[in-house]
Length: 512
Image (cartoon, rainbow, N blue to C red; front, side, top):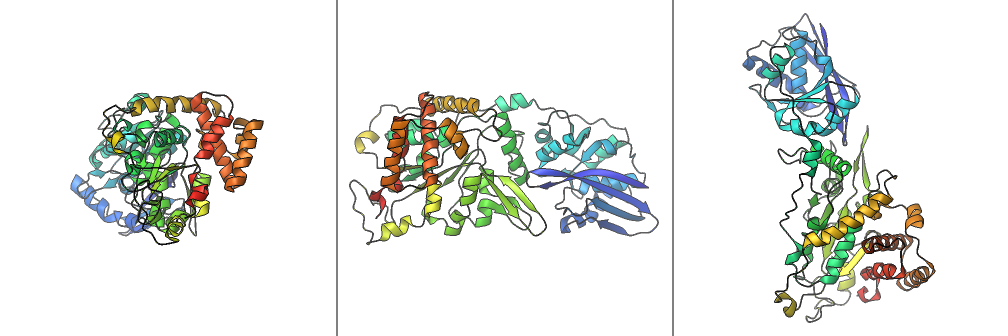
């Protein structure tokens, strides 16, 4: 008897339908074909144990299992459950009538319990697109999959429940998630708040502009000036997700197995802060079986790189293309996968090895040429892709001891949200563009064209600072964001002047 059961393979952040064909004939051998990896081949032992512990007999016949399409590599232990159900159905231990309507995934333990899987959300989206009635998967992943409307999602804890459901002996409880309610359940209390920051008004302003347009920003200053402290407070002023952004980001974290338990839909923008010892692959993604890297896990959120010059040069250089294209393509001999990587890069660095170059009180003790050598660890092309360069100076004692409350994150966030709403209206007809930082050069001519006075100001700055064409585009994007914060329809010379002022590292004072 030939039986077909349906599963899925996750490639990148999308899933592909896998048809599992199981045939039972005379003999006593077990064959598994269709390009399975070692962990899929090992499923035979887990399935035998789970079926026997559950009280059923593993058929003592020749079983041939084909996983189609055969040119896609099947990885992981998530195929245990569909394989076991297919084997029981082909030996007529359970009915096969319902199997064509359901997609089934789950890892089996030896006692028949079902363990969680990765990528439940993209698999559920694919199941709906392919017209399946429902999706049977581990209970721990059920809420995540139930975010997809129009698909019956059943969470199961052990194989007995699936067998009972197939034999019409048990009704499974449907998992229902109110996506709108989950999405709106966005706690506004953040651990860190800008109200704790004394002084540094110019830096706060630069971070506000960066958050409003999702611009990359680098902070340069001596140790203890507050670079890391302010970077950690960035999530508190970022605008809430749109539903589309939330689904995009949740898919990536689902594939990577990074979703918090019991949270079906991410409601806060990610904040990733990798250590400077990180490898190239961990940063951009990859490996023998490609997985999302830090830049993709930071998609629609913040990637904070503290002590930027301490990162391996090759790690920083592989980020150049994703910073420009907002995606990363990982190619292997037989296939390639693409992960989105539209993140806001917030970075911090000391101005020199000793940390006190340009310090108002302390003297730099670095030898001649050391400052330039230190800054050269950050290549020109990478620096060119950072929209805002802001210098931080230490807070004077008078400011630190001042008890006057600073502006809280909620107030800053209101202005950021208002600016983002203007951008959402501007780009509502453009797919994949949510903020000013994502504008193309063509869009800049339409939405950020300066007037005659602004052009003259920009020309002078370009000639004096010897800026590149990319820096020109970045200045226009930042000035468009500043105009949005001001509620201005046009980009005025004052907006351009502020944007030009955020190119600190292009100035001669930083030549060392």
